[in-house]
Image (cartoon, rainbow, N blue to C red; front, side, top):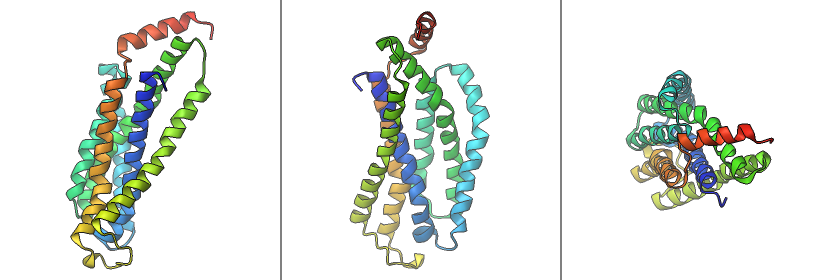
Length: 226
């Protein structure tokens, strides 16, 4: 973790995964306390996200061919996640949730498209720098930071519910106070958006893998017997 490029990458994954888990964990709160009605509504919202994800992958691939910078593509897709998540803070209908989750799925599909290739660039950098392969250790670090995001979700939900008066005993969505709905909207949209943006800022400040550096690393790897 003393390597800034490695640290920037795993921190970006932490903020990304934290935001995603908050949003997926919030959907059922949205269905029960904001939308009301049958649970099938949340299925439709998730279907919108899946559709956006599938449709976005070919488009992101075309964009990547022009930019040719995996690290920059992670920043772009993370910003798309933030921009499309934030408006859901003010949404109150299934139709609008579905629309914005479809748009959010575009960023989600892009991040998944470039996460592995961007990590490959980081691994190459680390191999050239250290002269050895520690892929297992690197994958373990990645898994740890992504799993650690469950703790951030729990803390955010607890604090948000505490300060916005969440009451799980309310079963009629018509009786849910606005402060409680706003709290759910915060951990559904505004707070995840903040996490996505924070991840980008941290990543930009720490990551030093420009296309030139990536190309040099690949050339050096070709001469190394590893």
